[in-house]
Length: 601
Image 1 (cartoon, rainbow, N blue to C red):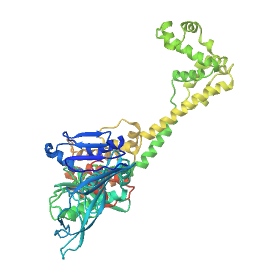
Image 2 (cartoon, helix red, strand yellow):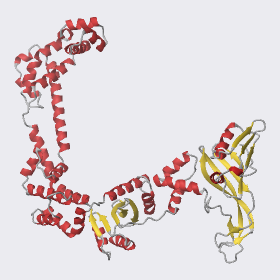
Image 3 (tube, one colour):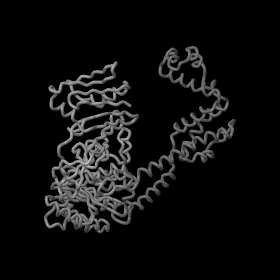
């Protein structure tokens, strides 16, 4: 380690060490000379091991002077020595002058009595990945005011260091920005990588004690609930619709909590909400006129859930019956498709001759594309003599005896198999004439049928998966919301054959509801649709219309307003993300701070 002495904090620095090396010089530059001082000059004398920084104090501008003062906690302190360790830089300060008097922070009485001094160990920003500790002496003072509640107090270092703090005020601000965006555990790890040592609990404590500016609501807000503890404890979040930012949390979703908050904020004139009765009752209990807007998404979600509960089981059974009937139909494969499958199956035989047969096919394909022997030679990377030899020979010259036997039967097998239903390859054996089996071994024939059977089975399973994936109850609901007639056979057949209620009337009412809420042209008014639904004779449609009738004004506002609870849904997702980051252990106040004041997420 090297000991460095400072004679004056303003106009002249002289650093002296008997064992000063280049690494220390670089660290000193980073600590003191990385300031925008154009008038400063650095001098290093190799013979006397003296590092000097000179500048003309009279030519300093005010900005340069302020930058220089940032190195020192106050005007009454100066840097005495710096000790470099492997992972820490220790900066020791001393009093450049003794203050004549001190103000008591409790009674603001002026006193000049001191009772010794002690060091405060303050952590500041890391330098080149090394932790930096400032060891600053402070006086212990005695208050002479007999009425003061404290007899002794310490010399204040504010605003450089807050009272009882072990880090600089600037570093605290930096830590707050970290812990707002990530969890305290993650922030503690990231800061330790940059040379700042702070625990997760300390970060959380600083965040809870930080004096954040209050957020006020505008005249338009939105409110929604979220699960603080799923299935047990619920809270509410309030978002300003004009700035699209969360502004406050409520401990519960009770109507009394909502009413009290609205009475405390008389400027609010419009509230967007979902269909929860707790919010509507709380808003209605306020003694002033507040416009309520129901969220359109929740209206469609409620109707869709009713449709799912009504048709999910029946539609699933209908799709299963359709799949069974489709698998029993006698659809046929094209003969050329079967022939192509059989040829590929035969070409995979041949043993050692298989590579030569594949090369013969490649040369023939190139020749069909009107390529010369030289061009084929360059394309395939073989000699032109070899190309000419292959062109002179026939396919059978490169086939085994087994392949020759099967090639002669391939067309006949494809013709008879194409006349048999799909997926039943083994039953095609009985349709084949006896002439096909001449000079062909049973294992060879079985090899061909296994390929066809596997292809048929795979094709059938793919079709079933596609039907199951495509046709769910959500597919039916999307069709019911559309005004155009569907051309899908499965859905059309279900609508026609469903005998428990008039599906065409359900289709008409659901499609007209979408047009009414979205305020499309030539749509019914809301009152007309409700009266039509109430007299439909369909139980779940009548119940849905009765719920709309109870909060008719809020639904009417949703039809004519451009506001919704979309920003609330995004805020709830943000809250869920923050809860997962903190492993579900965040208190409601901490959750509120991170949700409201975080700049990302």
